[in-house]
Length: 113
Image 1 (tube, rainbow, N blue to C red):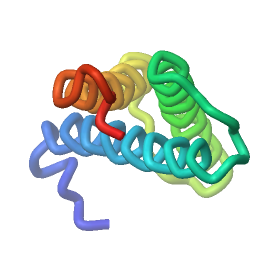
Image 2: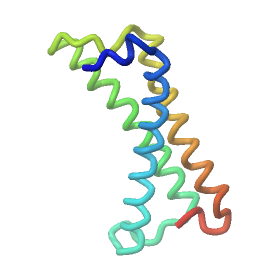
Image 3: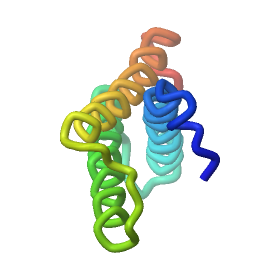
Image 4: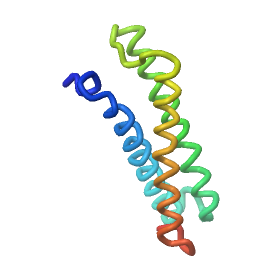
């Protein structure tokens, strides 16, 4: 909309990285709250980390599916090819992993709960 990616292409990488962090943060908080209130039962930190990582990966994949469908059915040009798509997924996953690494490094005994 603002043609920011055209004017400054590295913005795409930063947005996917920050998006991965945001998704992982949301999933982490949701899982912690669900664990504390009962729907998930008690979940250990390792299980929490694995679940958040897996769901962050899934979110990155489904985001790219949405871009593909948008390009195909709405005529947008969100995807610039296979390398762009896979790079976007990788950077989003790396953002989620960076969040998890920070969370576990911040409080190794509690995982940042």
